[in-house]
Amino acid sequence: MDTPLHMAAGHASAMVAPILDIALAHRGSPFAITGLQGSGKSTLASQVAAAAARRGLRVAVLSIDDFYLDRPVRRRLATRVHPLLATRGPPGTHEVALACEVIDALLAGTPVALPRFDKIADRRLPRSQWPLMRGCDLVIFEGWFLRTPAEAGVALAEPLNAVEHDDDPEGVWRHYVNDALATHYTPLWSRLPRLLLLQAPSFDVVPGWRWQQEQSLQAANPGRMTMDRAQVERFVQLFERVSRQALRMLPASAEHVVRLDAMRDPAHGDILALRVAPTIAG
Image 1: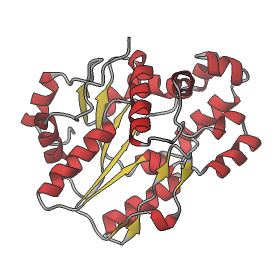
Image 2: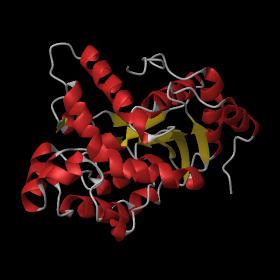
Image 3: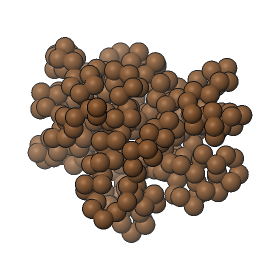
C-alpha cells in the first residue's frame, strides 16, 4: 500500500521556525537542504523562504534540479559515454559551473537570472523565462544528493539493481556517475558549508515517496503527460546507488539532521534540538 500523502500541506511551523533561525544566523553562504527523493526538501525550502519573506527578507530558492543539462546536451552525452546519461538526475547530468556562477552572483548582490527546468517537457526553460533576482538576503539551495561523497571504486563492481544489471553490465555508467561525484561537484559542495539533512528511514520508502511527487506533478499539470508507476519504479533505480551512499555518509557530516519516519514526520527530539541550538555544529 502506498504511503499516504501525509505532508502535502507542508512541515509544521515548529520545524520551520528554528530552521529559518539557523539559516539567518550565517547569511554569508547558502543554506543547503538535502534529503532523498520525496523527503519534503523542496516543500521545506519554500516554507522557510515564505517565513523569511514575512519578515521582509528577499530570498532566492534554488534546486539542483534547476541545473539539469538540457535534453539535447544529455543526448550527446549518452551517445558519447553511455545511454543512461540521457536521463536527468544522477550526478553527471547537471551544469555545475552554472550553479556556482548563480550562487556567487547572489551572494555578491549582483543581478542574476535564476535557471528553471520544465520536468514534464524534460527541457530547460528559455533564459527569457528565468526570474531575475536583484539582490537577496538569504540563499536556500536544495537537492537530493548535496555533499554526498563518491564511493570507493571497488564498491561499483557488482550491479545494485535491475537497471544496473540490465543496462550497465560493464559498469560504465556507474563509474562515470561516481567519478563526476568525486570531481565535478566539488566546487559546488565547497559553496554549501551549512547542510540540513532530512534523513529518510531507509531507501525502501523512496519509490512510494517519488510516486507521490509524480502524482502531485500530474495534478498540477492536467493535460500533460507525466511518468506512470512503472516508469517511476525504474526511474528511482537510477538514483539508488547514490541515495544509499547518502544514507550512509551524510548523517555524520551534515551540520543538522532531522530524522523522518515513513510518514515523513520528524523525530520530536530532533526539532527540540534545533530550537535549543540554532547554530552550526563545529
